[in-house]
Amino acid sequence: MKNPDALRKSIFSLVFGLIFIFSGLSFYRSRHLKEPLVAGDGLLEVKKLSDYFPGIKGSINDANVYVLAEKISGAAGGAALVLGGSHAEEPAGRLAAWLLVENALVERGRVFIIPTANPSASTSTRPGGAYPPDYEITTPWGKQKFRQGDRWSNPLDQWPDPEVYIHYPSRQQLAYMDIRNQNRTWPGRPEGTMTEKTCYAMTQLIIKEKIDLVIDLHEAELQYPVISTIVAHQKGEDLAALASMMISGEEGFNIGVEYSPVALRGLSHREIGDHTPAIPLLLETPEPFLDATRGKTDRELLLTGKDEFVMRAGRHGLLFERLDEKGWPIEVRVGRHLSSIIQILKVWTELHPDRPILMENVPRYAEVISSGIGYYLKNPEGAPPGKLFYE
Amino acid sequence: MATLITVLYYLLVAFFAACFLHNFRRSKNWQTEALYLIVLLPFLLRLFRLK
Image (cartoon, rainbow over the protein chains, first blue to last red):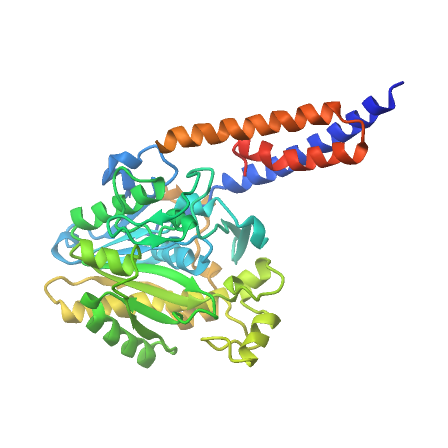
C-alpha cells in the first residue's frame, strides 16, 4: 500500500474490530448465559410474574415463580414467598432459593420461590468494580455456572436514570441510580419503570396468592451495620425475635434482629408490610466481596469471602462483623439463609397453627458446610421431563 | 416519555459514534486515531446493546 496513512488506519481498524468482536461476544455470552434449574419433587407448578401483572410480559424481568406445595393440602395452610437475587450481586440469596426449588418438599401450605427476582440485574456487572461476569459451583457431576450480576437493573433494560429518584408513593428523594435498585422500588407501580413494574408484579402476587410471609434474601458488606441479621417490619417483630432465638439455639450460629425504619422508603421490609397483608422479613449474611476496601475483586473472593484488606479494616475496628483467615465462604452464607428460613417457617407455624407452612428436606447450615452447595444441585442432564427450567 | 428519552439517548450515542468515525478517517496523527477508536468502543457496545 502506497499511502502510509491508509495502511496505518487499516491496521488500527483491524485491531479495533477484533477487540470489538471479542469483547462484544464476551458481553453477549455473559448476558445470555442460561442457568439450568432442576426442580425437585416438591414442585407443584411454575408461574410467571406476568400472570399477576400482564404489564411485565415480554420484559426480561418476567421472572419464574416456582410454587412448592402438595396438590391437596396446599390450599389448607399458609403461604410464604422467598425472594433471591433482588440484588443479584449477593449470590448467597440466589443459591439458597435455588436449593429450595431443587430440594424442598412442602407438606402443608404453599411456598412461592423466585430465585432471580431481578433477572435484568443478574445480566449486568459493575464495570468500575471489576466484577467477574460469573462464578462456578463444584458439584459431583461437574461445575455449574451462575451469572454474577449487579445491585442495579441492567442499564440496557432501563435507561437513562433521572437526576433524583423520587420514590412512589412516598415521594421520598433517593439516589438517582436507585431507580434501578429493586430494594428501593417497592411497592412498585404499574406505569413505572421496569424495576418498579417488577415490584408491582410481586406485590400483586403477594395480594392475589394471600401470602402471609415474605422472606427477602440478601448479603451485606462488613462495613455496613445491618449485617448478620433479620430486618423485620413491625408486624413481624415477634416472629423475627423468636426465630432469632431458635436459630441461635438450634442451628449453630447467631443472627440478630433489626426493626425496619419507618422513614426509609422503598425497601421490601417496609413497603410490603405497609401495602400488603404479608409480613416481610429481610435476611442479611456477610459478603466481604461487597466491602469498598476489598482487594482483588475476583471469583475466589466472591466464593471464599477471604480478603486481607477487609481483615485489616477489622483490626482497626471498622467492621460490624468478625472476619478472620477463614473468611466467609459461600457455603456458610447459603447455609445461614437456609437454616434461617427453616426456623422462620417453624416459628410461623407455631404462632399460626391455623395457617401452617411445613417444609422438609431443606439442607441446613451444618449440612451445607459439610457437604458443599454443589452436593445439593441437580444435574440438568439427568433431569426428569418437565422439571428442567432456565433462569 | 421514558421510551422517547431512551430513543433520543440512542440517537445521541449513534451521532457521537459517527462523529468519532468521521474524525478517525480525517485524522493524520496516529495517536489521535488510536484515541478516537478507544473512545468509540463503549459507544458501539451500547449502540449494539452489548454492554
